[in-house]
Image (cartoon, rainbow, N blue to C red):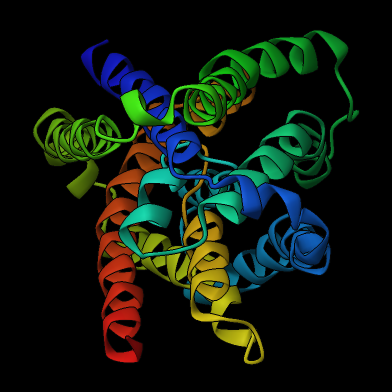
Length: 278
């Protein structure tokens, strides 16, 4: 229960903090981001799930752990990606657009992709409505509130933005510690192949920013970090609904631990490259 509360606070604060960092001029030039958004869409809902599917097969991950890792790979749009975008000195406007796009699309596409993977029937309207409401209240509204705060009351909210980021960072560190202390002993029982499989999947998800050689540093960092952070809440919900196996749920939580740790390293990598350029 506590880990869910912390993840919710992480989602709310990171999206609100991202909204506070978006400048008006960045929103006005949104059209230049369209090719990046299209690339991110196909990467996260096509290339990445397929790549993880073949990689996990080659590694020989157990069936239930395999299903959990694949589910995480097919669940983009994690709200905590906003915090990593800021840490990596990415573009806040692009980060917000990417999270909004992926989170909006995952309400339909992630259940559909996972249903195809399982050989199921596909679209479920009740599930879509539930996911849509979760995404709206935990991601969409905090981002919008941050934008409105920045737009109408910049003198008041600009000094608050660093404290919002610090609170998000605290929630992130606390969530990692809770995952380790609450589930670490059980997660270790999954075996080293499952851990390697999760690390490989996270590594693949962080790759797209590297391919955009002609893009600026902040755009590449934003794409990499948003793609690297998956929606754990969505993955856990679908695992509970469709699989109902403790090994699968533990693997999702294990994936979250690996994801946050590797993504934190990747954020420092992009941050370091930004400092070198400046």
